[in-house]
Image (cartoon, rainbow, N blue to C red; front, top):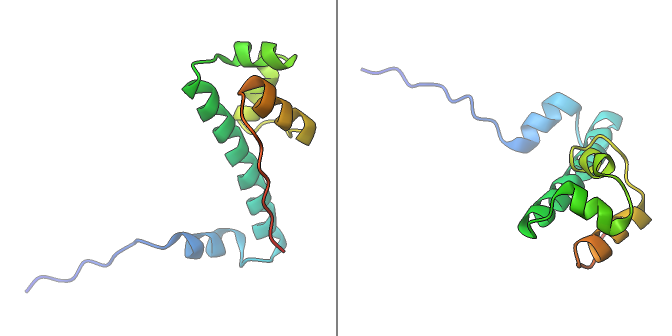
Amino acid sequence: MKAKKQSNIVNWDDHLDRKYGKKGTPNREKYAEEFEAFKIGVLIQEARKKQNLTQEELASKIGTTKNYISRIENDASDIRLTTLIRIIRVGLGGQLTLKFSV
């Protein structure tokens, strides 16, 4: 008779609970904030690549540097809302829609 293999699979929320604490705790909230910033960078990068723009071309369109675009895309720099809007509207020809819940 074969022994049952124990699964090491954990759902994502349980993983986050163990690593950062339950929702509402300071560590978990810090993680959530940093993850949102990371997602913004990824979304900008994906949109830029979809339009076949280099970081340098996007930077030129909005009057900033390639280095700054790189830092945003790699979550190494905070981004001001006005800059985010300029990247999306002017640089990528898109529209920013914000949603929040309380």
